[in-house]
Length: 151
Image (cartoon, rainbow, N blue to C red):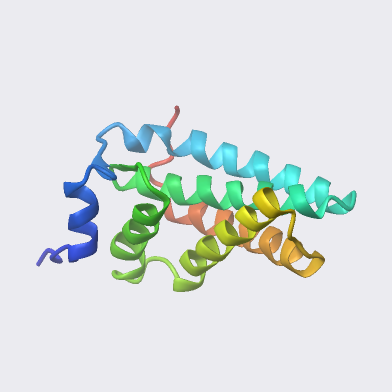
């Protein structure tokens, strides 16, 4: 029996902020590669003491990991809020993805905005964001192993 989609997800679809995207699975590998590149940069930047940029790069790694998951299900996003809603609906609800990753993506967005727009960042926040980005990418690779075809 197919699960009924939640009202928030349906609202995102109706508003066009989440759209069906049948070629999505062909873009998974590219998104995972982008996530990996951003993560590598975040780690190098953090090791060099660049807390602000490491935070920003780690967030974008998580964003690309999340996007890969959405593409794997044949959707694309036009809103961070709806990306989070889609992950909750398509992955957390069916118990494919742990909630901590979606909450980490949300926290990472806030940390990125604080670093980028207000120059507010911390060593602890940078380390935590980079660590979570690595875990999120590993999880996304596992979840998309069957759909990560060539880009």
